[in-house]
Amino acid sequence: MHILGVWDGHDAGAALLIDGRLVAAVNEERLTRRKLEIHFPSRAIAACLDIARLSPDAVDVVAMSTTDVAKTISRVWPSTKESYYQVRRRKVEPGALARLTRLAKYRITEWGPTSISAAISRRACLGDLRASGIGRATLRLYDHHACHAAAAAHASGFDSAVVITLDGVGDGRSASVSRFRDGRLEPIASTPASCSPGVFFEHVTHLLNMRELEDEGKVMALSDCASPLPDHANPMLPLLTVRHLQFRTAVPAPQLVGPLRRILWRYPNEQFARSWRSGRWSAPAPTSPRRRWPRRASRAWCWPAASPRTSR
Image (cartoon, rainbow, N blue to C red; front, side, top):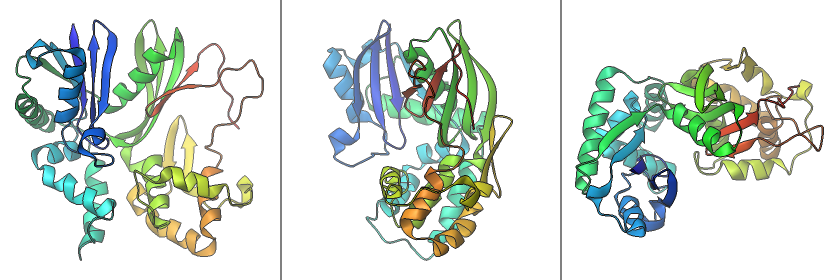
C-alpha cells in the first residue's frame, strides 16, 4: 500500500508511506526556496516519489486534511493566501484596508467545515493532484486536529495516552483533548477557534513587530530577558483561562489586540513576552525523575495514561 500524505497550507509538504513505513518526507520550502511555503506542494510530491522510485500512478491513497471555509477559499483562489503571505512576511506593504482584511481573515477561519466546503475542497484537491500526475489514487480528507492527534499518538509508543493538540485554527477548532487506547482516538473535549490560544500568541508576536506564524520562537527567546513574573502580577492571565478542558478568552480571539496593546503600552517588550510565556497555562516541570516527559509530534502532545501530569 502506497500512501501519500499532503499538506497544502502554511509550511506545505508531503510524506510517503509504503506498507506503513515512512519512506520520504519533504517540505516544499526546501525546493521553492520560499520560507514556510503555502502553495500546493507539487515539487515535494515529486521529490517523495523520486526518492521511493515510484511513478505517480503507483500511489494508492492520498491523505489530506482540513475542509473548513477558509481553507476551501484558499484552495479555489490561491491568490488570497499569496496576498496574506506577502504582507505577513513583509514583502509588500499592507494596503489601506489591511486592518479590515486581517479582521475578516480571523473571522472566516473560525467557521468550521460544511458539506459544501468539503465538496468544493475535494474537487480543488483532486485538480491539484491531477496536475501533479496523480489521477488514480483515492483521496481521503480528514479532520485537522484528528491528524495532529493521530501523528502524536501513533508515534508515541504508548499503549494508552491522553493526547492534546494546540494550534491556531483548523476545521473550526483550536485545541482538542482525546483518549488514545487500543489504537483508536476517542475525542473528549475541544476548544472553538474563537478562543484560540494560538491566535492569542499570533497577536502577541504581531504587536512586538514580528511576523506571526514564524517568529513565535523569537518571542520565547525575548522573554528570557525579562524578570520572572508571578501569576498574581501577570496582566495576561484574565485574558486566557482554562475551564472544563477548554480554553476560554475574555473576548473573541480576533478582538484581543486591543487589550494586549494596552498591556504592551505599560510594559517593555521583553516583559510583555514574558507575560505570555509565564502564565498558569504553561506546563509544569516534572516533579520526579521517573516521570516521563510528554512526547510531541507537530502541534500535539501525548502523556502516558499510567502517569498523568498534575496541573497547578
